[in-house]
Length: 279
Image (cartoon, rainbow, N blue to C red; front, side):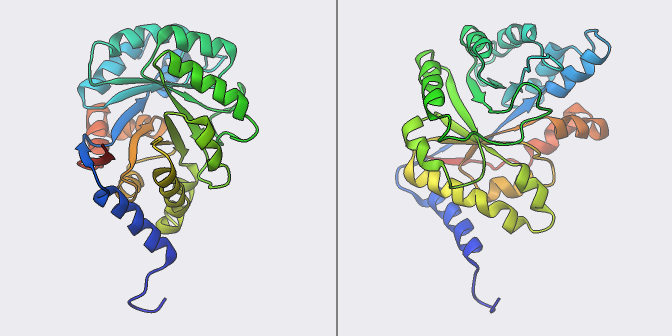
């Protein structure tokens, strides 16, 4: 590249930052929120079929150490989070005015009924089948448009914020104009997978998606999957529109090295100081 010139990727990243720092009617709200996914703590508990570690105690420690929310993803086989964990966690979290409860999952009839009854702050709908090891792709927004529209309207009617898990691709984003979820969650596996080879190239598809979302919609933006102490800060510095990140597997792995309190501190130190939002 000729000295003094910038690539299209650099220009887009600069544009993403500029739009969120210089748009009209901007107000400053608290930093990007960190939601801790406690699934892997539950997996450890279930290994002995006992109550160690106790999930309420773990969630309370996470909250006391500074996280902004708790995330769980119950699956039909209850391999980690069990359905009977949901209400006790919900009761705990509702004691804190600044902490949110996010429940992820495939929207089976049973899942939808349980989430409606519990009424968490946010439900994140994922397309993976019951036997999936972990979430590995976003929704086909065109194929499932009718189903997702009904689900979004249902949860909105019960004042539950609804987020859709999506791939970092422009291909189907126009369907969001009809779907109108409250938020989307960017699937960040590809970002992590390519981060150490070329972080600018790794984040470029996400810049395209965030630029489109903030230009054409008022849909909020979350992100999650394979975020860690190495790649989180660059993601949030480049894409300050991200309102929430959920981190679980890597967080638990880091706890083995640093302990729960120190791990939480390390992640919180990577969050930006403020997040612009249109008034």
